[in-house]
Image (cartoon, rainbow, N blue to C red; front, side):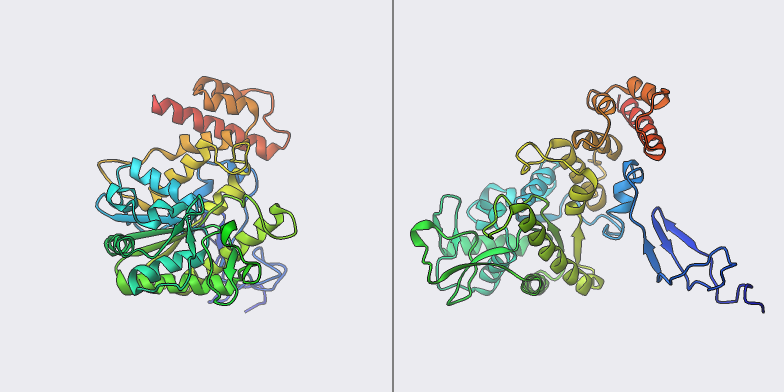
Length: 398
């Protein structure tokens, strides 16, 4: 056998799905057309170009790939509890509006802190505290929990019982983590929900720090194991809130602190999901990456609240991947994608106006006009294709 002849163990480079390559060991002959300098492993996922991120399948191919369940597990009778950072309320509101069974939207559940202050539980420590309190009767020896106006939330047995009831009935936990910056009590190590009320602040014992990846991973493991112990058949979905910090307590810029805060949590989530995913109960939903890497600027002017269309697309994509109700199919993805890109400022103004105003004829004109939509040839071609896809989706909607 010559050096260039393929051996019995050689395999052809296989395309698995858009942007993904499955590679066998690469022969080293420079005369072979499939020669590669480096062995890339069994699976190689390439980062998309800007042009590729315009396609209506971009989110599925380049962000959701590897994170979507084989079959949607949420059905009309699935009982869902979502809390954590403020992004959790968007999930709760969407699923409730779409007539799925969200326990924390029930009137009877309002007394539970995971409902009344659910979107204010922004760190992994307090989310763990709620599970330990509800299921293990763990009571902390000081006031750690406070509401939006600094009112103290105690360890009321009735609230504890309601929290336990909600957890005991939940089939699907959706937990959104928001930040790794924490205030804590130095003598005990206990972590507060948020900062400390000014009237209670004691500089000798109340301290601030950035929690570590290891600490957050430990909290996530504890949460996972508690749920598996008390609700062994329940599914657990971790998400990272894309909403940036409103302020940092570090002595540097908020933007750089936000990068660190999110990175700590994202690494912790990835470690724990990889550790337990083969058990089939723990999942991750990449809302963070959809916002930060796909839509670029999906914010209202305050950079804290979403534009409607990008948020609607993320929720629509979630429903397609996670929910199954034949009597109530999810909204179509294609028009939601176009509106999201338009509101996020990704598209040329002429396309943005045509998409948001629902003008399919104008979109077809833009796709076929001699005037380029972008100076880069590949981006121009991708934009023209998107214009035709959006025109078709708008026509189908009529």
